[in-house]
Image (cartoon, rainbow, N blue to C red; front, side, top):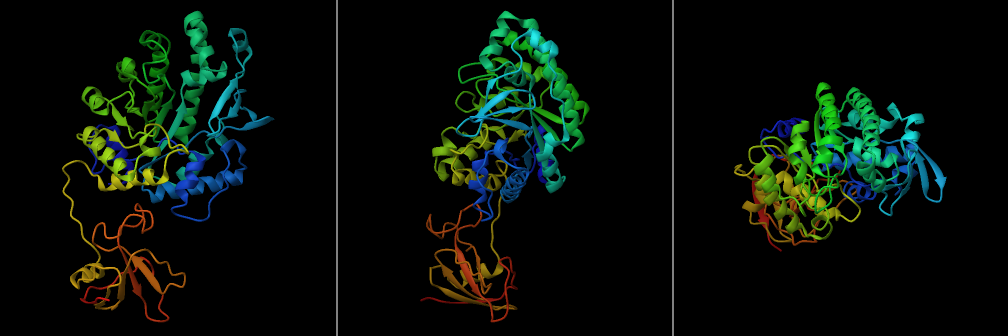
Length: 463
């Protein structure tokens, strides 16, 4: 089953052969940290608003490498709107919003182009341009249909609050001027519809409607305000996405329990990120697992920044056991990957994911013939040398760490004994399993690290 098919199965509330894995976004600094596991050709650290086109292309290449090497089943493509630098760390985007970057590279709205109903009458909203979807076009071209293309689309609640200059200003309007709220929601919903048309044309499979409605205690607006001032627009957007043949799920941090029933009524197929500080995924599965695909729940506030690899693996297995049975679960962090997340913890999450099939799945393990030959010859200690008599007759020595050979005379492989090398004596565990074997090739014959040998008799010697 291909990655895209696994994701489709999950959003259709069916159980794929393996739990799908995806990430909503990975911060620029985190892309570089993860990229170090796979390449030395890394981009310079810049935030996207500071990048040239060449910078963006190199960052995307690194991201695509990370997605491919971690074997993600879907990729998110963010909008890349044109910006105008204003000096002093400020910039204006194509909506007319003045913003600045936080220390973590998050755009923070300083002021918006609309302060009241009078401004809205003369305001000319942004309309989608293909250049806004550069990341989507590049991802589609690179991955084709092998994985799902997810497009995080800012929703009308998020878009409207940025246009008026921030959350506080917009929330006051929910009390003082609900007609203005409707006008704002209408303006941005019309844009969302146009954006979905463009995203669908460029190959999007799934829409993530991105807008926060809650903090850890409860929702930012009352259930009544959501029902009256937001729900009608969400229903329109969901219907439009379905008409384009796309799944659509809702993103919101925080405690969304008060309005979960309305998300189902709106027609969303899924909910992300199930923030573990305030939403129990087992309880959510019991209450909504037959109607919503649950996405996320791997804590990026404490676990991924501060937890060790054992904690990450244990938490992931517990989460899979709680949310995956029967289908309708996609593994993801509890929001996005920020610079504080340890790259080692995040890659461990993927290692555990690909070993963590659906609960109850039978697993058989083994090893390549030459490795098994070493085991049969009792070559299991560092320094042991074995010769596997067969077509290639390789001579192999067990070592305590990987030893690259730029001239291609030696190649490294993992030993079949789990946990053979102590932690810290190997390359990152998500790329190379424990244990190392160095094989010597005859002079003049270069071997590929992926070289294969015919089986034969193992002869070993201890030093």
